Image 1 (cartoon, rainbow, N blue to C red):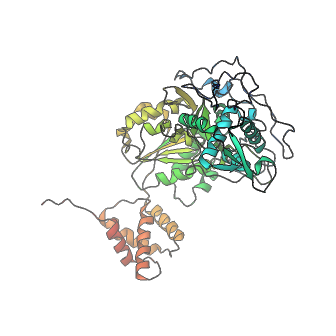
Image 2: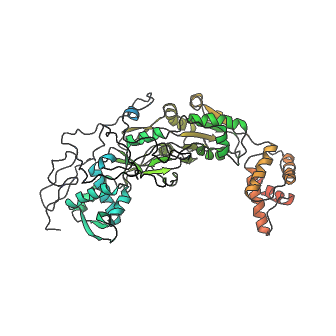
Image 3: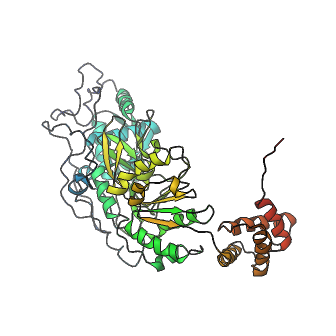
Length: 540
């Protein structure tokens, strides 16, 4: 390698004009690219790309080499992002800054009766310009992928950074001309660069070290912020048309009163927020966990977002359930994952810090907060009032997003970032609402629903449903004996969770005795003794 020519700077072949966003290469051999302090990857261009038609099923990539993209020497630095006025209802970027390149209508073949067809579809990019990424960003993603893996085939690199093979091949060839990549050999499978095995050269060592000092993100290529804005708008939960039949279908198996249905339906259609309150153990959480199923259509979630040259990781496999692609449909942009609408649950662990961008100084990129991961889905704040932060401080944090559909996040540099707030928020508490909320909050959460304990008839219905679920023969007389002896006789109130809990203990006792699960006074007595045990303070 010592006999080769001095490598040109990353992002060019040595014959182009000087790139104003990159520092000059020193003349002393061996050549290394040095980055000035604070150097950032050029931000995405302000003007949206020209509209293009999404590829059809028989579309083929264009012939010939892909054009090389470099910003002109006169390109001004990207403007600083400042926080818009809080009284503004929508950021201008939400409307004017959206890229018209991505149609919100699904592709052909997905408009049938299938209820889960998405309303937004990201077509596969055909050029680097379509991705909205700079050539430098693409090159750095490939270099980091090879650094963390040692060696990769061309096809493995494309899968790792989720960009089409023709785009990756062009970037790889450019890196080889700059002498940052070397060809180790072929794998004997496939043709072209996809089957070739690549590794880093010694010239790339210092360069990769500088790249990792800025961020250690290693994964799929990020999506432009304005493209995500468009996706959020197309996949919104606002203005849905959910009826009683749809809700009964999704809440099947739960005993729900009519006033809960009548209150939840309009709340879901508004896509705003609902406040559940009532005694513990009566199904507030169980109802919330099924509400997200009432919304039609899968959504596309980006793996990561690009803000200037900072990366925010959004896709979370523990929260976003990936769905299979349409069989025989056209390929989509692999930087987006087709998912069911997310259901994000946070409880006592919620703090104000977890509601903002989470920056790690070790890896130098951001993790999206809970509410951003719940975009186009449902966010359940369970056990409201039991968080480490005071209810008043937590409510103050939510007032602006609930009012303006807009949230404000803070980068570690202090810069404010305005993002859409598009998720159905459900607050659930078993504490007295009068001790938690004020009039300003209640005005913004328009739907308030009390989940009451079941009456005796509903208790029977819940017990019967639990028996069917656990394959235990239901006996109404035995359940009535349980009510007369262990409820009425002790002045106990019903709770919707008690049939499930008592029946589970009955089943456990039967399995211990080696008998088939059944309902009997003796088994109910043993289960009630354990379940309703009372503890008294020792006065000694």
